[in-house]
Amino acid sequence: MEALKWTKTAPAKTAWQQMPLGPGIYKYYLTGGLPKNVEWPAELQPLKRGGLIYVGRATNLRSRARHHDTQTSKSTFRRSLAAVLGLQAQWHGRSAHPRLTDTDEELLSVWMASNLGTSFCVFQDTDSMAGIEDAMRAELRPPFNRDGLTPEQLHVSTVTTVANRNALRDKG
Image (cartoon, rainbow, N blue to C red; front, side, top):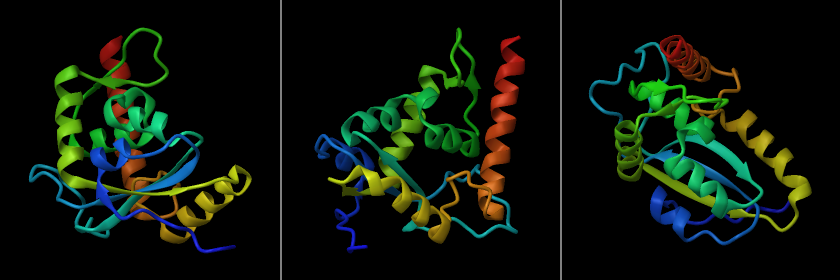
């Protein structure tokens, strides 16, 4: 496999706005910090500034940007961040996933813009993209990929599942 060519890590909102149409893999890094009220368990590997927290792929990077930028109901990563940050999701209509209130969507978007960086690798050959993403997730084990490979991933999965369950209970 040839070496992947990644863009320089840039603030998430800026990086997504500069993406071309087309497929690729993206990485999120924690470039700031978690809010003071977030209780990341002491027994887990701490989330460190500059640390990789998520790896994903998209058949069209530009359209995927909209999901991560504003639509929690369409982004597993955003739902996980919202749950860990303690933002409350709500179920609306027949949605398959909960979404945040408009106020909490804005809070999450502002926090992401201030505290996350993104890097991309654009692909011409999409056939190998899924395998490369899977290999990266298995090797790097980013805590917000809910693969269940690490205590950190299990923590994020559990917190997100509980938040989703609470949102569904509150709907009823």
